[in-house]
Image 1 (cartoon, rainbow, N blue to C red):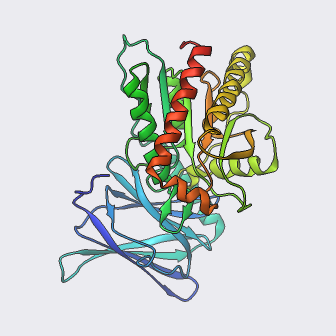
Image 2 (image 1 turned 60 degrees about the vertical axis):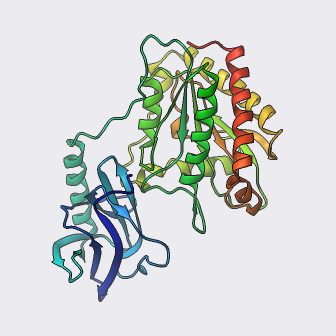
Length: 374
């Protein structure tokens, strides 16, 4: 999002009238059009706006009350921002009003009223049908057709309205984006690869869209970058994940389940993941791809353990949605865990970022020496 965006929200307010009515308002520098719809599982109200700069911090965010149990906001797509209100009870926006303030700003207020679950369910279905007919912006790496160098697609996790894991004022989406740009620059300096990012700004990208970008561009390698939290605070260091229907352990399964909820965080109705991939594609292709992914993981571990402690089980498997491309070797790299104070210190270090990215480049070089590009 451009810092020069004409529209800025710098204040939000929540007030309630009993347990059945809540008012949510935002103060914005100019009047804009808004659209609201609801989504189930969990129950949410989505407020869609043109591109907005949110000049907010934890101290300025309103205290949750009434029908609103949590909120988040950010860039959803180029030209589009969202505010998502998580609901403590099923509810609907019954009225939207705007008021010109003395300082020139516009205050937009959404009246939210509790409704029966059946009414909410029907509204969610109608909204899902309406939104399905609305074309969404498509993203695709820009590539030269006659360039036969291997294509490495780097996927900075989260983005926009989805901040990922948080540790105080530190957001996972910012940590992994900075790392992804460093890795991209180092790979491009070599001149041996074509390199692209699934997002080149702080914008939300759906999980399936990330995977589909890799397939559409015929990527030779897909690397997703993350830095999550984990329940065991003493756990730290790099961990490499590859795709599998069966997780290697319970913690990996929980992490994959958490990551697979990113679409819901962005206000997208989450569809069931396809279960018949192996039936659609030749099983040989799927097995070969996973075999290469597993070899890639081993190479990554060998190089990364030289620059940072690795998890005691550094290569794990789980059903991450972004790793489900059956024809693109893929890996998800946890740079470290934001639940670890030692890892957080490293994740913010430019020197560590440079050293780790250089180690990744060496691993990618070794991988392509083993397996030439398609």
